[in-house]
Amino acid sequence: MDELLSIAEMYRADALTIAGGVPGPVLMEAAGAAVVRAVCERWAPHPTVVLCGPGNNGGDGFVIARLLLEAGWPVRLALFGSRSALRGDAAVAAGRWTGPVEAADPWLLEGNPLVIDALFGAGLARPLDGMAREVVEAMEGRTVVAVDVPSGVHGDSGQVMGVAPMAALTVTFFRRKPGHLLLPGRALCGEVVVADIGIPDTVLDSVSPRTLVNGPELWRRRYPWPRLDAHKYARGHAVVLGGARMTGAARLSARGALRAGAGLVTVACPPDAVPIYAAGSPSLIVTDVADAAAFSALLADPRKNAVLLGPGAGVGAETRARVLAALEAGKACVLDADALTSFAESPADLLDRLNGRCLLTPHEGEFARIFPEIAVPDGGKLTRARAAAARCGAVVLLKGADTVVAAPDGRAVINANAPPDLATAGSGDVLAGVALGLIAQGMDVFDAACAAVWLHGEAATAIGPGLIAEDLPDALPGVLKRLKAGQR
Image 1 (cartoon, rainbow, N blue to C red):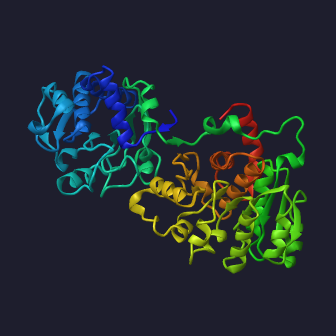
Image 2: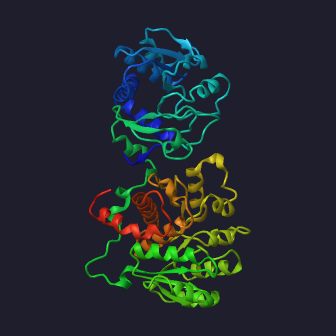
């Protein structure tokens, strides 16, 4: 159930199933029955309005209305559009409904009925307006059950096409879509139930989805657990560039790398800042680097195999020079924060030098600075992250409550376990450090990014309210213990 299907991929899954001998009306009956089961498990019979749209989503609504009525629910059915205009499976479903069909209108929602939103599915092509918008707006404050997605939420991007209701429950079919996990759609779906309607898993072999929900099943087998014969150098020597003023950022990153399992972690910082870093964790190595040449000399040691640049480094020519030095040295690089913003005036100076051993970890503001031609919100977060990874040839981790990790070859995951408590200063620095620690141990960059994001979210969940960034590294051992034991 980790696959996320785009609208086009879901259409293909439906078509392959029908071509394999399952009639479309059978799939529609199964979809409607799945919604009715979910509704009856959660609510006792009470007045319900089923709002049907002009396509197959509306056809599902006709099935739902009929089955609820047969189960003893008081049901009214309203259609947006003309019954005579329905085609295909939706027309078949409408033909089995023997009750009245009313015109969809906001006044039908007076009296606070349960609302079944079967107006528009995931493939809505334009923003809702006119009467459709008025009906959706009238759902505010009502208990809404959405069929597939809340009407107005785009299934691929999670973006709201004009307006969308807040659902208490969303029932979708076979697999979730990206829009169920990407904001703002994710916040509007409520509880999401994925129903089996008879589409066989084997269709995925032909559909070949490229987007997955992040989780240990994707990378657990390749996690770099220490071997019995391991020693510190076998577990990698990570280097964190430390700044002169914002010293907390690099220290948080370094501790994240240590907790993720890097054998050694060196903080390379300006000479004047050495006492600050040295007063921190005794597990860290602290060394002074006065300029880019000294930094290059430090990286000449082949055992120093992974470098993090950016947290608290400062924006400007010095940070640019150190980034370029690390890339020139052929190290695996994690680039975050100031390491990205330092190239805002000429992004190509950075992007043209990247490769598959590099990980970029921007938030939305940093992303817009280095990918200005891609940072158009209308494209959706998943589309933008994929385009950025293809542009620079590196793995891109676009942060947020709905973090997306994208590889240059088109693979992508959406992370779903990050609690709101992570919205605090320094949490991103820890995330970059965890990714660094995993890469230093030889984990593939894409896998390391996915694992780091998930571990970060699990650690935050374990801590809960009151979380500050310093808590995150020390919560990792408990998370890792459960992961190694095969527990989520």
